[in-house]
Length: 247
Length: 269
Ligand SMILES: Nc1ncnc2c1ncn2[C@@H]1O[C@H](COP(=O)(O)OP(=O)(O)OP(=O)(O)O)[C@@H](O)[C@H]1O
Ligand SMILES: [Mg+2]
Image (spheres, rainbow over the protein chains, first blue to last red):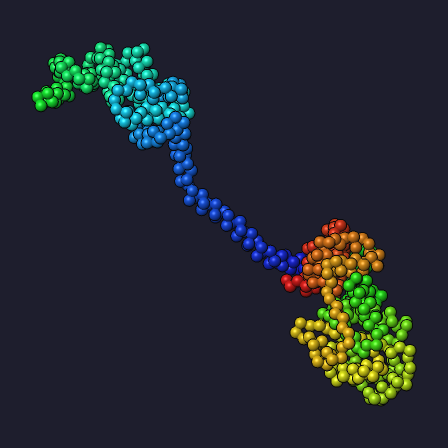
């Protein structure tokens, strides 16, 4: 009659044969998305990095744009060219940011084109550094020229308190660069009073005098300084000053 | 052997044609009714055709069974190929004329006109595709003379469409085509067959999913369904004897249906 065991074997064979195409199809269908995903993720391996790079830029752009979007745009290049900033994070706040550019402008006697070109540096730099740095550390790091640059008032305040000649030199240099020669003169003078061996401070002091039209006083100071320090830079400056006069 | 739940259902599906086993299926009943009315009309020849196993013989047997109470009806289920034998058997069965000698068509028609029946006697010819063209011509002449009325069944095969053959085409007055069962019809067929024989437990085991598989395997062919169910219940009987706890009495096991299909050749494995 019925040979059940052999029937069962034939049935199994039949089932395997019957489902083989389906199994193959399913395997293929499953493999396709897996391959696609792996290919896609390989292609995109660099994509997340780009995004990461983009994000800080976006933040940088958004914050300053609230105030001066047009002026701030070129500042991106400045940021990249500047040394990596470190900051005293607590001190930086949007309110101080708003004040800073105005204060800088108010002190300006120089042509507006120049100042507007420089202004973005002071306005933008704090934003970028604050965005980046606040996330990393709450510890106030030691002050250097980069941090001071963005908020000269704040550094002036500091200088008043601790009379650090390096701070004073920095402020003098800052004002000289910003064509605020009287301010540069003042701070260079103060710095020299604290430490009279800083060559750069003396040179800023003398050059500020020249810019302010006090060439005679500048010459005298130069000769005095050369006699004390024997500075080559001072000598060169004196030479050029005398040549200028003889013309 | 001990009592088996599956022996009786198995025997229900032995492939024999017995009018007592006739199951009423809507479409078939409809055909049967139109066949019955056609028989009452003054038609000379009625054709019943369809693929093998669609129930032609069954319908013919049913008709024979139902009509024989009221009128003279004779059925030739196994074709009589020899022309002389054919006329002699008819003369004997319908007119009671027993003669060992050859009966010519002319003498047959004379005999027919001598015997007076209130209704034209009915002759049912199963498997008519087996008759020769010459014999079919004689059959036509007999029916044209209104001596006898014929209902014939014909195989309809893929490669050979006999109905299209010229000698049938001109003579058919009415033709009825039988088709394979739909899943619903097959369900009714199987269930009714089981219930008629009080196999309620087994009938309950067959669910719609089982019917779907059975229909798919048999393409709704009654004969194939019979064969499949027969071997399926043989299989169940075997398990009942050897591994009774493998049997699930809630439904038929699809695997076992397929195994039965392999056994009957419906699945080639
Ligand atoms: N209405 C029905 N009721 C019960 N059984 C049926 C019915 N129809 C068909 N069958 C069964 O199906 C099987 C096949 O039917 P049948 O022998 O009548 O087919 P057929 O059309 O004559 O086939 P063939 O062309 O090969 O002679 C038979 O066993 C018959 O008992
Ligand atoms: Mg038949």
